[in-house]
Amino acid sequence: MALSKELQENIEILSYGSPERRVKAVQRLGRIRTKECVPPLLLALNDTYYLVRVVAVQSLSWIDLESVIPDLLDRMKVETNNFVKKQLVETLTPYVDKSVVNEAFKAQLNDTYLDLELSELITNALTSQDRIR
Amino acid sequence: MSYLFIKLQWQPNPVQTFLIYSDTVSGDITRKEIKIGDEIQIRVLNKGLCIGGEVEKGKYRSCIQNQMHSSEKSETYKTNPSVRNHRCLLCVRSDFFLCRSTCTGVICNPSSPRAKELCTPPNTAVYVTNIAGIDKVGVSLSVKRRWLEQGSDVATKIALLPGLEARAVEQEVNRALPVKLQVSSKKKRSNLKLENFNSDEFRKLVEEALSIAKGVQNEKHIQGKVFENPDIIYLEEYFGNLGEIPSYVQHFDLSPNKEAGGKIVAIKGALLIIKSGNYYYTLNTKELIGCEIEFINNAQVESQFSLDEWF
Image (cartoon, rainbow over all chains, first blue to last red; front, top):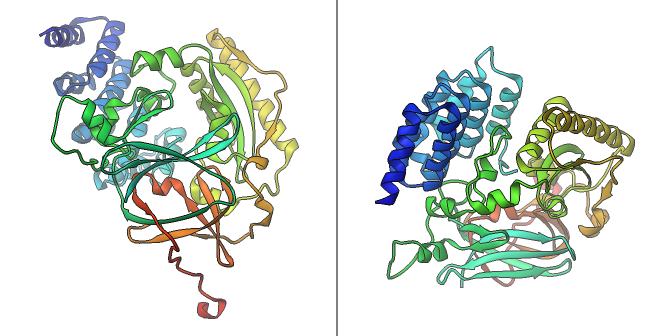
């Protein structure tokens, strides 16, 4: 019961809280780490504040990344903030052998305006077999 | 009797190497020391299994042990297939330092109170290293262990900072200088010895990295320190006699049903350099992670083609 109350509180903060409080809320959802946290975290991927989106990607990866890969790839297509994009690439890199991820990474490389650092990160992900730092 | 290979671990003080593996039935973990001169003979049975998680600093729990600790009880336990970084979802969630693998230095999102406790004080080292002729920048809470684990030839610590800021300096150094964040095993295998290393150039690179670290520290008013004129450490002595190894070394195929073995002549990072008959091979223990193996006698090593067979 306590958990659902905590969940509810954090979901409400995501809707009405200040940017800093929304960041804290997505952090807490990542720490609760239950499947019920996934839908609000997916909504947080569309938050207007970039740090909420960065933390939402991290928190999702701690819960059940595989099932949300399509959502993260959709976000990557429209994301304009390089910090968020970098977080998406870092988080999805362990799945680069999956064709959907592989193709999405390659598509990013076709973007003429892609940041140089991101381009190198994606190229490394596509070519390297040693991805653990 | 089969085991699940978890990792090759370096202990920095005193320098020792261990093979860590778990029993595939009980999940119990064994930490066995290996030394240069030891014989190792293995057969790979299966791959793609979960290696469990690090539940506290340096304390591993196998996938079976994690299942026993979870709320889902069962009569019998079996290691799960891995879904990500050699782990199943249950073991991904049990890792106390999960945030380390997703940190990009933008915002601190600690995955556990222990992770926060470890990472927040200015204890994370930013280092510059040369591995297989390639310059690399990285961060670590246990820097000598990290250098040994990645097979660094030469290395130096440039700063001690809180984890997030250390990561930010790492990223900035990577952006500004020709240094990598990762060096592939293939590159490491192809250049085992410290050859063509220019210490003056490395020193110059370190000075540039120090200046970037100071800039970031001043700009963000970060606690911690950036070192002045840090010592450059040579690590070759810990890896064995790399001089006796020929420039061309074969690589063991560690696919299921393959066997590998011989006498260990050097251990460099995750690579065991093994002599079998007249030939030298590398056994990349990173490729063994998540593999079910058995220790055997007289491994059948696929021998090198003779030169005549090339034509």
